[in-house]
Image (cartoon, rainbow, N blue to C red):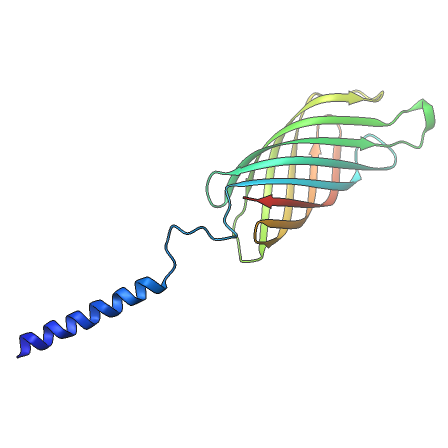
Length: 175
């Protein structure tokens, strides 16, 4: 009799365990805030380093997430540094390709801070000021995350032979 009771208890316990497993989401299901690829655009405004007026950077980028918090990517950006000096000192315009690594230290459900470090290779330079063809840039930002979309604020600082510091907005689609 005791053996039959133990057998029934074990069967009931196993049935409840199976019910719990059926209600839990599968471990392999993708969460809407997890992604492998991000495509984005940004605009920044601030001290461009070459001109006497506020400069700007427009950027298009793509990133692949190697691990949950670490991604690598590439971007193409345009830096414009206007001058109010007239024809004696024309506006400086730069175009560059950037390879970067980006770290997202802790993702929450709707906030996603990040840090990016990139290496620049200038592809096109206009203006009379000399410009080095290689440089570095760092970006700190905070994304507000919706499923498959992120909107955010960032601060960037970079240099070639001159230094720029800017703040801006960005958006990205996450797949």
